[in-house]
Length: 306
Length: 291
Image 1 (cartoon, rainbow over the protein chains, first blue to last red):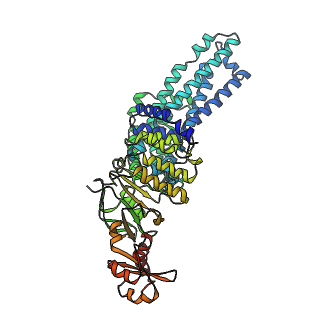
Image 2: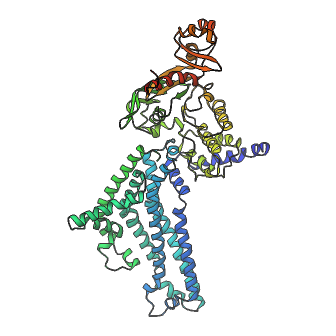
């Protein structure tokens, strides 16, 4: 063991080290985000897995002819029907990302205390601020952008396959492409993610992170029950539902007050930038989120293994 | 500037005083053993030094307040707070990547060199390693950090004797030099007493004894006295007396060694025996076991 293992490592080790230092001369924040992705592989594997299942289902159904009636391009084919599977795919991937974000956020600051690894992380020159922000970045920045990328790739693969099916059946590919506005769909999706998932939902994730940093056990219950309790208390004491409405409005998104329809794709894009950014709810939410995150940062300083 | 400087350091959990006014000064190049019974406040003291817990009183570590400046302090301080705090999911190579990424004083090549001497492979995950190997990995990481203060809180707890021996050998031979300071707590006092330059006995949140090893050697004497000389020996006021193999072992504080040599064999007490004499007696008194 000695001769072989001692002789070998030298050169690769040296080169790897210089590569690593050249790549990142001590950027704690970047490494903390990377660390989160090492630990929580489900963050990117779950959307990928759902994307895979969706692709498989689409190919199967398209091949079996279930969508054939919609693919049969003629004067009666409406773009809405044609776009249905694309909207469905986007909704599913975004939904998955939301669920992953929820469970990630509620566990991250609790998990490091439960497995005692917080003592190791705190032995390194990384501030609590950097740590908490690197964790907040996962649901607030990484997952929206990643699920956007996955959705776009899936949608274009679906289009590619539709094109093949349409072409094989001898119909007009140009007709399909002209009816299906995939680029508008993608840009609308990106707008939705940037506004709703990255800004409107921020206080939700900030709240989850705070509870995760605070709870000594059962963080999910602590995240949900107090909110439900306040809602119920208000309902029975004052016979009003202001608090419940505020919470539900936060989850249903800023469009919920404007859009009447329930169609996923159309409600997703039913809000324009001016309306969105002028809504006081957005700014109040962001201020609340900043306070909750600051509290989580502060709290982590006091936290010990449990 | 002292490495650690504490004045009137206090910490209470409700009614219990984990630290009840600690005054301590640790200079460069020392290896200090912090020794005390369970619940004496050792870990609380170390946690305060490392910025892991708040405190009252005055505490400076390398000139910084550890509670408010933990992240800056950790550039110059490393610690192993416990065995098995390395995250179980992490890959050995990723652990080195991460520490290298966030720590400006981490020498990855040195950590790799240390690891080649062990059977740890860089592709392994921490959960696949034995407890001893995890301790080796943590030591490899810590020793590759060019820190001024290293704090070890029971770093070898639960490891077998081979790993424990190796641990302290590596620390002394490959890591320690005159510019560094090490503070260590352990229950296996006998294993580290040859390593230490200073000891601090702590009991119920207070410091009972602070001494360098040279001072202990010149100040304390243990004398093995046969029954015939026992009365003469007791007249010299030993601080502690125990029986060993039919002879009485008496421990004296500041009594001339030549006088003691006349009554029986003399030697320097082990840290463990001294600890029992100094702290054990006090604890027993406090609990009403000894009048």
